[in-house]
Amino acid sequence: MARRFGARFSPRNARTDRQDPSAHSAPPQAEPPEIRRLRRRARLVSLAAIPLLIRGIVAIVAADPAGIAQQLGAFGLLAIASFLLREGISAQAAYAARSRARRPVLPRKILAALLLGAGVGVASWSPLRGTVTMPVLLGLLATGLHLLTFGTDPMRNKGLDGIDNLRGRSAARAVDEAETYLETMTEALGTLGDRALSDRLARLVNEVRAMCRTVEDDPRDLFQARRYLGVYLMGARDATLKFVRLYRETGEDTLREDYEALLIDLENSFNAQRRQLLLDDRADLDVEIDVLRDRLRLEGVET
Image: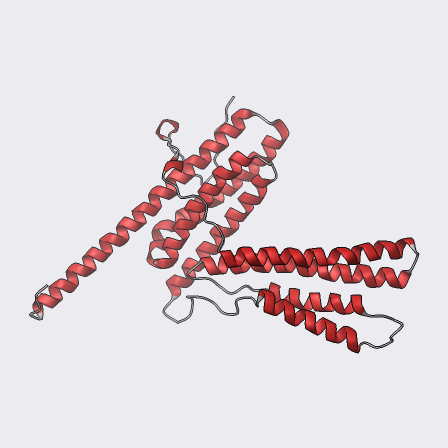
């Protein structure tokens, strides 16, 4: 029996009224070229750790405790640096895509540079030389080159300054919450390896993020959009986690069909609400223009 998916707060549209919005939905936005370049360069950091792993394995075979500690320790530092660098680039991309955003709490790219320098210093140390001058210099050089290549993390909030910007900060918190739900849904669905469902979810994510940009540009829209960015997405996340668990256990086609139908429902709902927000903004603009024209007429200025 087909079971309709929807958590407590999921919007429910009649199946007969459901339409596929893929014809008018924009494709998922591609990352800026700068971010793609940084991601490609970050792979080189991962590759740089491989020789250290090989040397560590050789030290294990040779039963060299000092070599094992040095090589595997350096490998671990570079591996952690590579992970933090990738996370830092992702945080930078999210920061750049939003008109209002908080700075990352953890400066991942800076920490990655420090760990990379430490790893290079450990790897270059030699007991035969008995001096730490060269390893320290090489470590500082590696840290500096890392910062020059990848830059630092965003160090200040964007669009959130000022005492009168309470609405802007509220909008930023709502968008942060929505992004958390989207990330959880994407990661959970990705474990199934179903490309078609992942593409369908990507279209929904694109629609949600378009609404987020609308709210960030005009935080007054948060009052109308809060239910969608919070309550509905919370329900979508719960439904996604439930679907992934059941579908992995049963593999029933009806489960997949119902979940895909839910994604279409959500995409339609978010698209319609975003269009309504834009219409409301246009109406507000028309009112402001009319008021300004009336004031100009009172001042004797012809419009």
